Length: 119
Image (cartoon, rainbow, N blue to C red; front, side, top):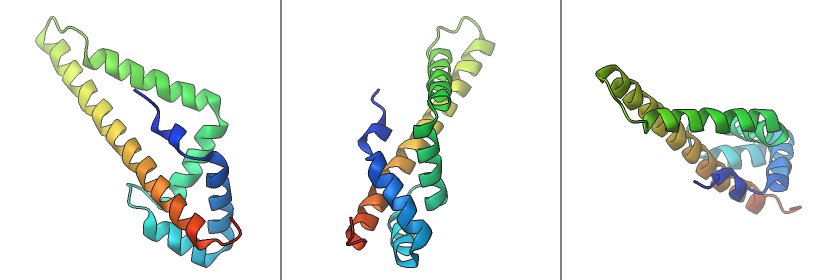
């Protein structure tokens, strides 16, 4: 599975954070364009924090791999099958939420770029 966060320009995200921090118009445009889960500027800050923290990125990757392994492991008992089903549900929910956040973030970054003539 490819990482959807690699499709976001980190420099543009940093510029957008600067713009939404200093400009009410840029912030309003960014928030209006963001259609993912969570608070728009918070998601942007979280994205940039993850970009700057390789340890956190690695921990996220390991956690998702663990969930995937658990979800798709061969279940020899009802208890293991239930654990696999729960892991799959968590994996799918987190993956959907992250994908929706990144898609919303990409749209919001495009909106801020269009409204900021200095970019």
